[in-house]
Length: 156
Image 1 (cartoon, helix red, strand yellow):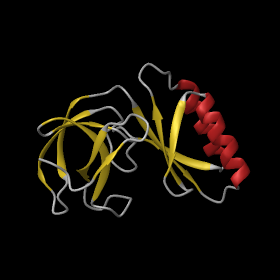
Image 2 (image 1 turned 45 degrees about the horizontal axis):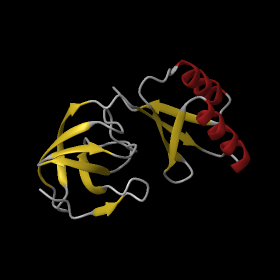
Image 3 (image 1 turned 90 degrees about the horizontal axis):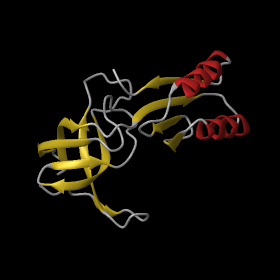
């Protein structure tokens, strides 16, 4: 089972493949699936290598089993077989200036999370295993109360 989309990770030199996570109908994103980069481990088993934008209960480092191929020739995620310990959150910035957004993102880094920019509105946050979430969640709640962003967890 080989994906139609492959690349070499420029940092690690590892081969990565796109796999497909099917999303529920009427998902808030308007998409029916999300493509994520993953490292192939063995036939049909992959380790997620980016922070999901839309999928819930799926994180960087999770090991998943894929069954079948999508119409785009991407292996389709069937289940998480081993959590990687990372946690995903999402930020949504609206009507926030670049300086405010950059200041918030710097503080998020300081509080132990990394981020990926989707489109200057949607950001995916990754919290590594063993990192406390309390200070980060408190900070996000304060920024939301101030009207600078909204946020959600990537878990149900």
